[in-house]
Length: 291
Image (tube, rainbow, N blue to C red):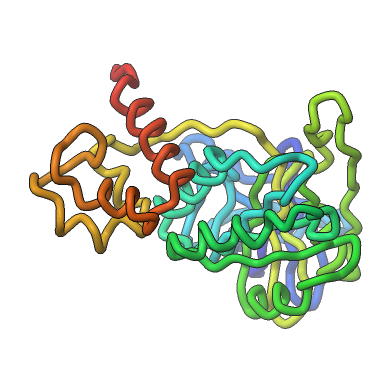
C-alpha cells in the first residue's frame, strides 16, 4: 500500500494511507544498511501488520526534493516566518534560510507575522527590502487574522515547509490555517526576547485541497554547508543586473574597484542590510576551515 509519512518520532513513522487512515510504522532494517532514512513527506510503500494500526515501511519512493535542515522530502516551496517585532528579526538568519532553500531549488515566501504589534510600521520596510531582492513577501497577524486569506492562496495545492526561529508565531499561524492538528504555542522570554521551543518534531499537517504544511522545530542559528564563497552572490538575486557593470570578471563585490554592485548600493538600489549580510557570510565562507 502506498502512503505518505506525516510524522516521525523516535524511530516510528506515521504513514497516512488513503482509505485506511494513519498507520504507526517501523522502517525495515535494510534502510539503515543502505544509509537511507525515511523522512517526513516521503511517499512510501507499507505492509500492514496483524496488529491493528501497525505497519512496516518497505520502500521509499523517489523524491522530487529533499531538505537537510529541516529534514523533509517532497516539498514544493518554503514559507519563512519572522516576526516584525518581539522578537526583532535577525536578517542574517533570514538570509541564511533563503540561501538554504535556494540550494534546494525551492521558491520562498517571506512572511512577517505580528503585524498587530508593528507600531512603527517596520513591516512595510522589511517587505520593501526583500521584495526589491526578488522575494515574495507577506505581512500578517495570526492574532488578529490579518493577511491570512492571501497566505492561504499561496499555499493551496502545494506542500510547504515552514521555517524560522522560535517565538515568531509559526505554530499560531498554522493553527489559523487548518482546523485539525492544534500546535502548541509558547510565550516569549521577556529577558532575551526569544521564543520557547514548542515544536519538537517535523510534522506534515493537511490544510485542505491537497495542501500540506510541514511544521518544524525552531532554531536560532544556521551554518552554511556545501557552499563556496565564489558562489554566494548567486543567492543574492538583486546583484545579478548590476554585476555586468563590474570591471573585473569574478568580482567579489567587496574590495574591488569599479564594482557595479557597490555602485548600486551607494545609489540605494541594493539594500544596505542585505549587502552587509553578504559581506559577513562571504568572510565566514572565506575563513572556514577545510578538512
